[in-house]
Length: 413
Image 1 (cartoon, one colour):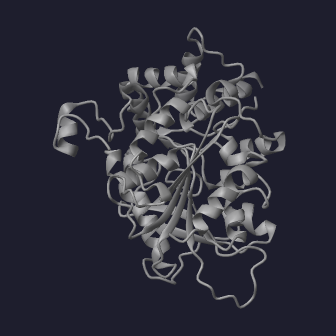
Image 2: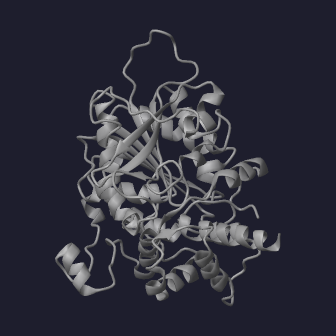
Image 3: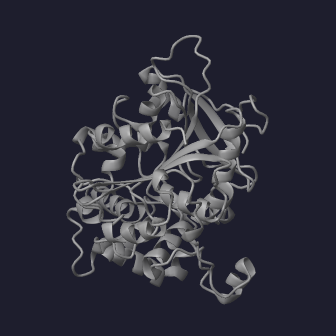
């Protein structure tokens, strides 16, 4: 029993520190439009989280260019859908953070969770599950036991995963432009996609970034900073562990060492890692712990740790100049140039004053890149008492955040 408790604590610590999501309690389904490669409806996210509340839900599989097969859930309409209404609904892609999956959007009731609020407001909602998570562990040629399956970081979410999702959703919604909402790492993928010119006014209608992540150096949690430094210091040891599985012995031992550092308090893991989340309910926390956390790639966690260390936003550093030359044609990884984010894309951002991961100082550094953004197409919200997990699971997120997101997406630009 004691060992079980230790496992739970260290898994939660890993989750809190590097996940960018938590709380303060202890492309091709076929590339042909209309041809749905629908998963079994009995064991997917639709059955567990959506249809039980009276919503229609469709399970799709989207195959990326690199062969990853992603589970995507579509909520095409709200519960109050009027029969015979043929109005074309705008699509919204909903993206979670790292080490969690699409389930985290459904911790609260239908009246309080973002995907169902969007569906009830007339949007065609598409919930993504990133590669490596429970519902997205298939590949056209690789098994998850194969090291090659895990050879990716969030760079590949920008270059391979999100393009496949956007292409699939667009083809299955009549070629419409896409609204996108992401939390935490989901915001980083969006920022990099815009900076790289992959998202423009031609394929994106508007973007919402909740707890935006680009810089992590100023985060106020000592647990996160020490974990990132230690992960990099032990890099060559962890290169032999391609899957960052929070329940695996080497990962638990790693964080046991982190907790031994002076000044690191592991007794109150969630608060120490993410800040004082104001508005989470115990029942939500309990449900959350039943389904999360999920695996990611060790390379992805290294990439996040590199961001903590360097205070710059670059592509993955392979540690060796010859490997960087092979991948990038230069000795050091190229930087994502946020000044190249199109100034005419409507962007909504919301960040919290108590967030220890998406720290206020780091967000303010990010916001400097938007000083010349079209003022009519940039909306920035600050919630003084919100921390990281409040944006996903707070009981009052509908009133404070989600209604604003919905209104922003409804605007005609």
